[in-house]
Length: 297
Image (cartoon, rainbow, N blue to C red; front, side, top):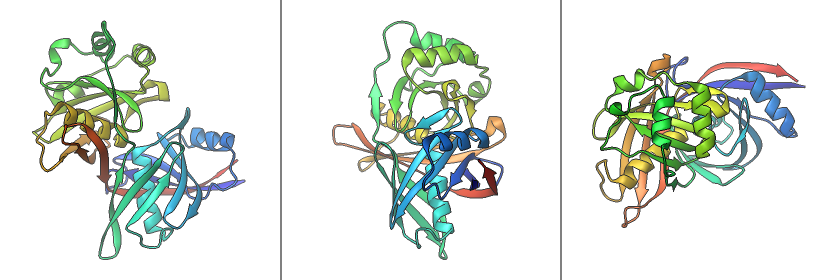
């Protein structure tokens, strides 16, 4: 069986930068084991399989090289823009990705009839308290950092908007780039905290941040540009009320991937209730096809 695929770089308009996803636009009849094999052999951070299309509703599944995940932000964004460019969604301005856990709405933005950007609602944000003890100390040590590097005015916490992550703030972007994580120790911290990634971030301005993301449990030493994880970061920042808020929402921009030579930009909006509790996360950006091919199973 020959499987056609596309490699698409998300959160960028330049091939070879941003975060690469593999798209299998016709996965009808594929078994879970076959999807897992394709994702492993393609070797990119996230692979998306289109199971069925019915008008504006697209049934999808997401895999990393190590197994299936609930949702992949950069892969979802890459899929939506690619479907629009391939004519699969007939110029629609909104489509819905039906995942294994929920349905994700994606808005498509056009210029002169061409889709140029997508904005999607990520899974609803959730939060967990850090356990008592030395969890932060252990995570900081695993990152190869000194506790004096930590930013005391920004939140350390565990949050979810597709993946559970620990967020560790640093004083400056240069300190984030100076991190040299020990992957075995970091994997142990992830197991102990029941999280998937550790996200190190630093401020660039009131609404701008720089980040690196490490996911040893997914066999991903470093994720170039994270969609859903940066959505969870924005929700955590909104919940802590440490970024400017207006008219029921918070907007931030996260730069990521520069350390790996794959720079990308993620725009995030978080809507919050009058109580200040965030309830909706939207992530946006560009995507560009980098390569097309066939894989024989």
